[in-house]
Length: 454
Image (cartoon, rainbow, N blue to C red; front, top):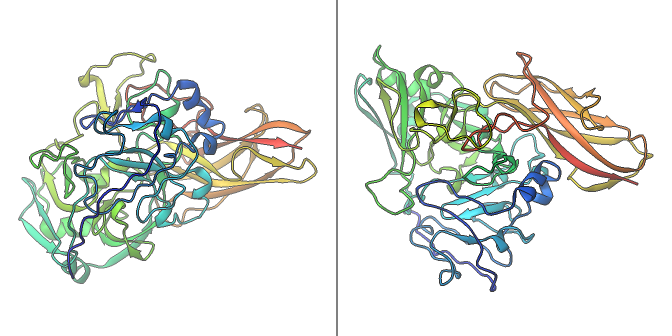
């Protein structure tokens, strides 16, 4: 099998004003979208999430990111895209992805999925969000791909080809929820630096591979093991091969849970390039940044892993609550572990009209990190009263759960439908933005959609 070849990036646009969304190579991107615009995402996420790139398409191949320049290069610094593009309604296209995904920045490429496109029980591969920290590998040959397991707490160093993994270990398939730690960042006030995700940096496809625990045990784990860390074949956004794009990990106790996979397939097909083909980690229920893509090395550590984006403030929140806008010292930040309880309304789209005489059907998903969802409630009066929705059991641990309900509106006019999930330990979503943090992580405020009753 021949290695995949890089394709040039092609961006088509017309002239627009040079205001920009920053895509700083050493930090996450910062949007100059107003807070009032960002806050509207919780009311009408589809309207807010329509910040596509106007009149241009991204045609991205395996090596398209390295050194690619947009047509706006003469007026914009490298790595920026115009906010005029970012807040218009025309769709953008990433190879292998639906045109409806909303591109938040193009270097590195990051794109979220409008809520209504997540209505399927099993997320379609073309609808899964894209979260990159660096440049995907320019050449991929699954036939020669090698995964190395080593580290100070590994009993030996071993290497596995993709064929070795498939032949030596039992195959497993799980639906596992992956959510970016910054999903919902756009709602924070004061604003937080990073990709301005609204609700669409979450997905729950079916993954197939071998258990991470089985491979680690085959290598041998020393008694002093504390953590595992991963390394992918992506390169730093600067193109400097001596720098890591991202190298995160999880405690050894989490790594040994049976649902965690070294995966090669999504929904019974090859994982899309933008989601880590040909091999990736899938750690359900924890920030998606722990699920390394283009996986080529795992280290078993005798300390907390210290790879790129493990140090504060990346993927950390204040250890104690802080006032909005506070400056927090790195030593006062704690690593994010499990994601919080959350729900998403996927049907209908926000802003649709509905006849008062008819019952209003509403449905969506709910998840709770590495816990389960006990109940979902619906409100049409801004949280004054709630009614129970029907909640399905998860297909397996760490998979999202489907819920559905019907409501009857008491009159014509403007209404909002709110959804609130509660986990199996009795912890519910807050109705307002949860604890502010400098990086805008862990927003699990109630999702809501607007309805005009006629």
